[in-house]
Length: 404
Image 1 (cartoon, rainbow, N blue to C red):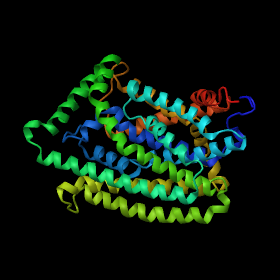
Image 2 (cartoon, helix red, strand yellow; image 1 turned 90 degrees about the horizontal axis):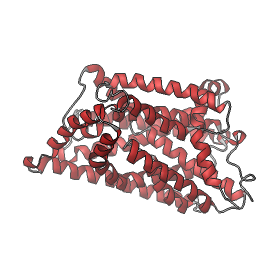
Image 3 (cartoon, rainbow, N blue to C red; image 1 turned 90 degrees about the vertical axis):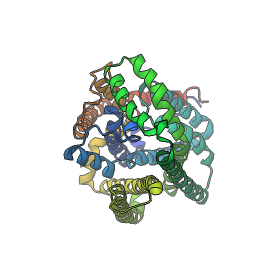
């Protein structure tokens, strides 16, 4: 069987609801990532430094924290798990080895993610996806029960790791000799990073990132890879249950998810706010650990609320038409995800317009909306003329090339 007979998913095979959710997730991802594109957010979180401290800026940061942080990364990962199931079903139906074909797909993602994280931006998610994807392949023949057990186990592991490392970090901050300058070093890196990213050349920014950012980012893979795999498994579980392939037959189940995720999401979000604002005092050595765990769980649950909300809305013809403008964005999600990076580093880095460190949180939200609006029109224009996005075509070509 040659590549002409084994073509990637055709337009009529696509599930529009998934594309709409994926497009919506890209908006949320940019909203969160914008904080890191415009400022040294990584170092700000590890120090006591604040760049913008007015009431409007604080409100904007809380808006992103409550409605976006941790929610859309989860949504995107969930869709990846469902996508794996759909890919697996289609390739298996052709009598081909899922493992061999999908591994080629992951190799491309691994290479692209490596270029993205090392040469462009440290907040990349593709490398995490590729590594977790290699592990996901091991579950391709697993039963729903097995997948569920592994998902529960990985969830427990992630909660433990988040709590443990946050606890250790709190102890280091509070008991480490002040002469070692743990917090002071990160505070000084805030000023240094602004100077470099605002005025530096590509090589200067790259050198700074490799020396200061990447060593902080890569160790996080200890937590993020099992976290991503856990969410992948949820997507695979839902895929194997046939929920999104037969939405009309699972409406009651989806409504139950919607109701429960709304209730628990609100409760956990309020708990997150109460603890973070010290309305409820938690021992200092547990404070960060509790915040991290509550933030992760609330983000997970609220992402289910978003997914189930859009899924239910898309069952109504009027709402499906209203939300359909997001579908082209979701159809070329990989292209749009990387395009967001290209646009942002051009706007904010020294080899572009050098706006790094000058953009307030509230202005960052408006820039996010502006960029995403451009992506909506570009995606609609492109998908009206081509079957696949630019990078999607290359990715699929790499995946299926030489398949016999």
